[in-house]
Length: 137
Length: 325
Image 1: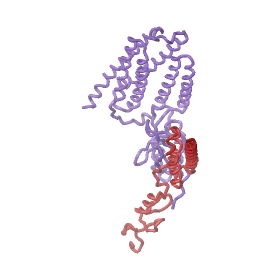
Image 2: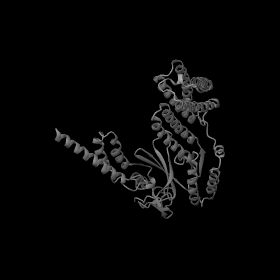
Image 3: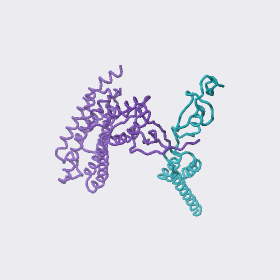
Image 4: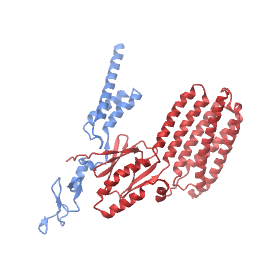
């Protein structure tokens, strides 16, 4: 496909290709060229990148699993008994989502670590309490 | 192709998107954009405003500083009054939280006048809740201005526009010019808070008169405190909602008068409690019977509350009739 002997846009046959997509290599016209964070992308690659959260600048929402794990490990301590359920839940969230992206400005997994330590301690405390009760009876 | 996430520098301040919002909003400075992070529970939403797109920052003075101070002061005075009224070791017990509240008030006041800041682009205007104090907003805008100017250097007309608007919106010494430059649209409100405030004044008046007639008892005391607290909450709600609203001016003034009167009577009650405490009045007897001046104060309070209630409803009834048509 060409326009007057020149490469045409992959998406618009009648338009002259002006650049190539940095990801898929397709020729793009000025309409299809999306210039973002120093890269030239075509609309499908941009959509793909957005879905896969490959570009931070396209991220508009994140779930903070580290905060969730920490909240599960700390807040139920007020009432003690819910920790029987929430401590394993906190541990599960921390391990399951350890590799999930953190908040966009958060760089360290300190909350995960605190959650794991606290949840583990709570589980150990429950195990000790159960063993003690069983041994008494 | 995961690109390196840009380093962000946090800008001072945090704020909520609404008075009852539990989430918080924080500003971060990126290499070529401003990032607004709204955190709510365990999720974050991000909004990026590229320096090239920012046309203006709009600053509007708000009354949140005074409202916050009024609420803190009320709690402090209430705790202090409770301690003084109970006597014995209790003043120390209640005085400590009152002192802490007073300290909070001092810090709250020292942060400077409150304001609302909006960021304007070609397509929309975004509120920046973290810049809710004027000195902080000034510092942040001073940081952002050279970055925006540098980003817009090659687009002359827009740069001039941004410069002009930012200059116009720069924080002035007085609040008045900024409020004049940004007239707010008039909102229609139902006036529920006003109805509650005026109605509670009426109830307070009735309770006071009954208390005068029957003498003190625990049920009436608790009822009186509950009505006063509800009254303060209703007045605060009325003050918040009546701003830029179509509530009649007379009703607005009455709300302010009501707030001032609540304070005056509260202070008078504290003075009486202190005087009674110093003069060794027996706490086991009714204050109404033993302390001179209390019946007069209560009667004045009841009559004033009744007057505010009547005048308030006279001011509001035509407004509600207009609204229902």
